[in-house]
Length: 240
Ligand SMILES: Nc1ncnc2c1ncn2[C@@H]1O[C@H](COP(=O)(O)OP(=O)(O)O)[C@@H](O)[C@H]1O
Ligand SMILES: [Mg+2]
Image (cartoon, rainbow, N blue to C red; front, side, top):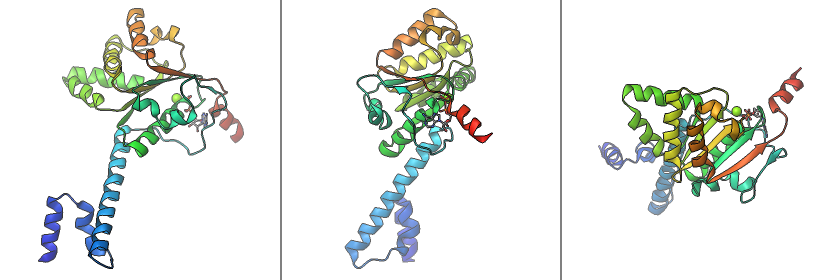
């Protein structure tokens, strides 16, 4: 009877850890008991929040080898630590990660995302450029575009991976421009690309639109140049 009441109250107060586990706590006195209860409830909530954010972010799987910075050129005003700690996210600035395949662009974008989620509880979403374009087109056709845009609007960090492998359809390019404009001075973008700006019109298809995209992006951006050899290539050589 008492147990049922406790569980009922815990439920009404949305204390879900406490509701299930309060009887497992051992304590010396009332204060100690309450302290332990609250600590575990808070801890559990934070874990659940991080898990939710990780699920929503849809980050690619990564290994856990340390990130190698040797062949990455970092501009002034930013450094390895502030990049990894996501300081640019608080400033609503962007990162553009440019370089050849296998040099760690996606890996770095993923590490930044993981840190932002774990340290600050940031809302992050990872897309390839092509997959976001497709999603936008699909949403537009289904009449759910504004809902999708609102979801993106709530993010702290939007990662657009692989700008450059696949040319976009006209509609996709225009919708992406809308998204990038919305992000301007509002939230951070991390974009990875193997193309110099001069070649971005191959992706966006239209020089005026491309210029507008680049204009929105570079105003508050840091350009990191990845100039090393492909780690993928190195890894496959090692396996042979
Ligand atoms: N700078 C780096 N430091 C550590 N590992 C790296 C680095 N660059 C690449 N790798 C390894 O190679 C894999 C492929 O790199 P990736 O980030 O996908 O390259 P890119 O996106 O530039 O094509 C990564 O998952 C990682 O295991
Ligand atoms: Mg990549």
